[in-house]
Image (cartoon, one colour):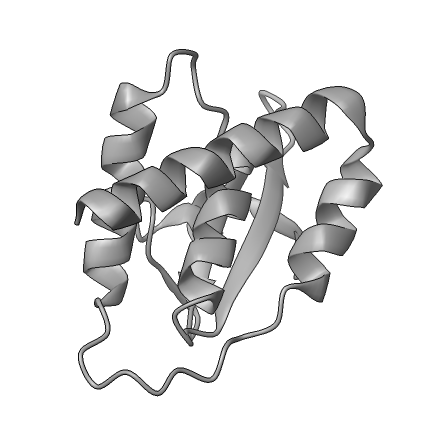
Length: 125
């Protein structure tokens, strides 16, 4: 678990860098280009364990972690373990808010399960 938390922490750092010094389009391209790994290990961590590792990394992170940063990092963490995860970005009009979350097989895995009911999906990659 410590290794997963450390990897999660490093992914959070990377996406903070991308979000501060590059464009949103750059972040989108990086997530879109991240392929699902073909893993040969017999005992891979579950989606829940990987999301829990990311949650713990967010607790230890020295700054407030944004939902887009956390979700992009979670997608890469999951895809590296052979899980087909999607970054989903949504918005609501009144009051205007945007939010990002991760889905696996159409189910929200790193947030509340009703995100699709609150936000209109703008992008998924």
